[in-house]
Length: 248
Image (cartoon, rainbow, N blue to C red; front, side, top):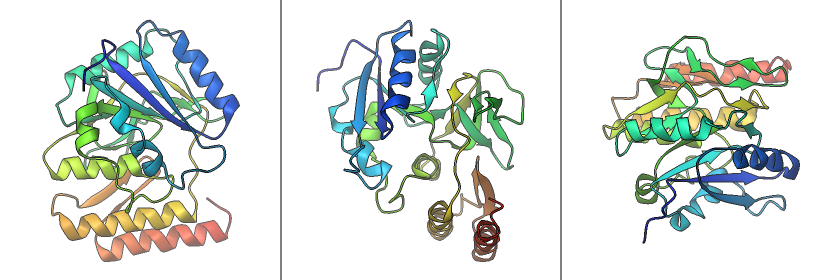
């Protein structure tokens, strides 16, 4: 496949056209060229984000690819360029995001402003790149060849959650790295944890506990636990109780 003169392709699966339009307007203000692939899921053609993203990966012919939520905005014209420059500093099989959990702890590293009040999502201060355990799905990417060689797992991630988290665990098992950078995007959501998310979280924790000694804990921006049988199930049932009490 002939490589594009543009460096990056942005892929966004959307079901809210107004949010997607706002995202596109912010992209048009950016000071570097890009390709954009919008996946229209308003009629629920896809039942998981893994399937939706995998459906277009073969079409990408830029060096880098970014996967974005529809409710993202890049308010400053240099933000896409900044993110791509950080991508250039990462390894060939590494993953980069704008929000993630630090290695061996549960603190969130991010300068993203999120939710209805656009509050900073992060709990630690850092500059540039910082290695982490996993990145959030809101805005992340890497080298296109990596995602074409290893696609998203449609079996483990068969809904709309944790597909970037699972991908980070997979590459870490194989010696690559996950990173977070200090690009302060806007994310008009603070994330939604529900029963489906909880089920998928436990499934991924169980899988990686069984296949790798490297993954002792599943740390995400929406919660963390050790992956062993007791801890992952205690975590699961605690959340199920909180759901029933309407506290999550």
